Amino acid sequence: MANTPYIIFTEWCNRRWLNNLGYKRFKLSGDVTLIQETGVANFMRCNIWHVKGREYDLVIDTGMGLDSLKAFMLNETKRPIKALVTHSHFDHSGCLHEFSVRMGHREESEILANPSNSQVVFDNAWTKIAIVDLQQHPDYSAQTYSIKPAPLTHYLDEGDVVDLGNRVFQVLHLPGHSPGSIGLFDSQNRTLFSGDAIYDGALLDSLYHSDKAIYAQTLERLEGLSVDVIHAGHYPSFGQQRLRQIIQQYRAGENTLIDVEQWFRDQQAQKADMFSDQDWSVFT
Ligand SMILES: [Zn+2]
Ligand SMILES: [Zn+2]
Image (cartoon, rainbow, N blue to C red; front, side):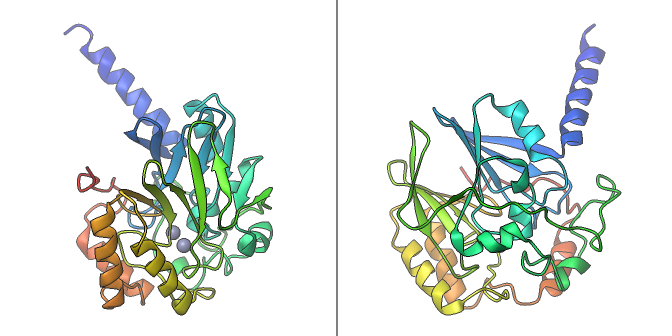
């Protein structure tokens, strides 16, 4: 009992310290950790995946860049870190510039090297909806927000291999949401990191560089993949059955994001605290 105030104080310090870093970690399995930005609305914040390897660690996607992801990662691992973006959108590429090894698809290398807000899809409705917690980020403003240039150091394309020494990923080119969208497929563990090519939420196929016909082909390919776990670019992870349901719902026109501002109003109406953690209990 004598220790209780001390423990409470230590926990308070830890929480405050982690919040100050702007990220939270959720351990999913032995070598996969989910990292999320704490000051971004939960329906908007991307999943940042930390995959521990024998030779180096991989960071898949890098958030909006409101706080330093690299500073957070240096507390997470002592191994070298290689960063990879599944595509160039602002919610995935914000901290890419902080890492010395930057991997992604050639089709979006120009955007990442010279990221204008419209090219990283931070324009129109996205600048009007309140996706950032101003209590945590009082200096944030949609008028001044931008992504720092992060030229790719390594191009990845269909059939390339990302080898962590003890775990091998095959690169899948999954265009449609964006032209250079890629996924990482570990066939041995039947696990896919899918970026925004597929996630368990309203899918986006009408951005300036989206292509619905090509996206339909990507979804057909994903539908036939022998996979047990999909770690996606947003929302909780899911399995093969849910993957096929999501694709069927998309084909039926049930889960496509058409009007961003209306979607935002719907989210607001549903959730008391838009900046809370998501419910991952659905993923077991
Ligand atoms: Zn995207
Ligand atoms: Zn996204």
